[in-house]
Length: 316
Ligand SMILES: CC(C)(COP(=O)(O)OP(=O)(O)OC[C@H]1O[C@@H](n2cnc3c(N)ncnc32)[C@H](O)[C@@H]1OP(=O)(O)O)[C@@H](O)C(=O)NCCC(=O)NCCS
Image 1 (cartoon, protein in one colour):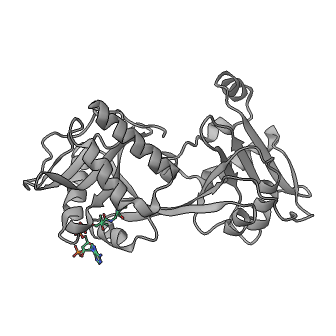
Image 2 (cartoon, helix red, strand yellow):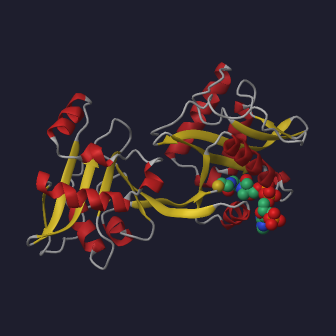
Image 3 (cartoon, rainbow, N blue to C red):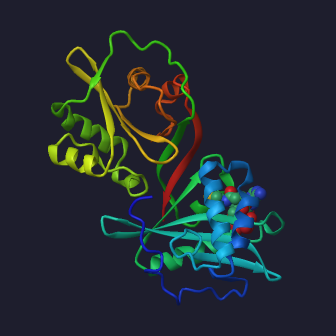
């Protein structure tokens, strides 16, 4: 994750609730209970990242370390009979020096639901973040109407809706449109590509994506920077005649999947353009894409991508 703050900073220690059930997370004692609760409440939607996160949480719990660097070390829990039955995590970021807190892991044990616990936990997290002068964001799956309704009534408003697509194995793509030609990106293509990138990955989502438009610039300086940092980006442009139709950057990573940054103007041709670009990638590694929801689905599916989830990005 990019731009993450040191979670030890920023929160007002006085921002506590009057409730005796609700208290701040104590990372020395609570991590195991939080991990159990998250596993129970998110079992049906847990992906590889989620499982990895849980593994780290349990490891930190075993070590008994304060784990201030690990999301879940900061937030609030709800206690019933000495047991953690509710949790909310606060994860700190910077967006151009402006502090942001992301509310995550809102979870209440099934036996204790519909008693207002999630509402009070979320309110406590909002107050703590706002008293630290931070903007508050959260992500919620579009197929979770109960949580969406809860957040809307707490004042959260949808800012963006984004889908994550993943491809683990190469699937031969259908033949691309013969009139669309894909070539390597040239320096002269950058101004338009940059404009499309800024539209497709606007500042309202950049703070929580590993995306910086400048990293993809064709400048010599940026090329040197990428070389020194052992970063490779393959970049392509789709053309019809002399008209640029869209772009695709593929950033190699050392993690499980390489990251794609396709950028095309929305419209009737978007799927054809995306398909031509995606079909151009050699089948080397798993791939991951974060793209505006309901755009490009036909192209991603045709090229063997699976929809991981669609999230509403909400801000209070
Ligand atoms: C979503 C979740 C956190 C809600 O916890 P909760 O403690 O039951 O929520 P609350 O009691 O504070 O209720 C909040 C609102 O949702 C409504 N609600 C909660 N569960 C509901 C249900 N099953 N059906 C209908 N409404 C429901 C409540 O009536 C309440 O509305 P109101 O304040 O207008 O009366 C809980 O269901 C959960 O842990 N789900 C699995 C994990 C999850 O999806 N987390 C959200 C991730 S973004």
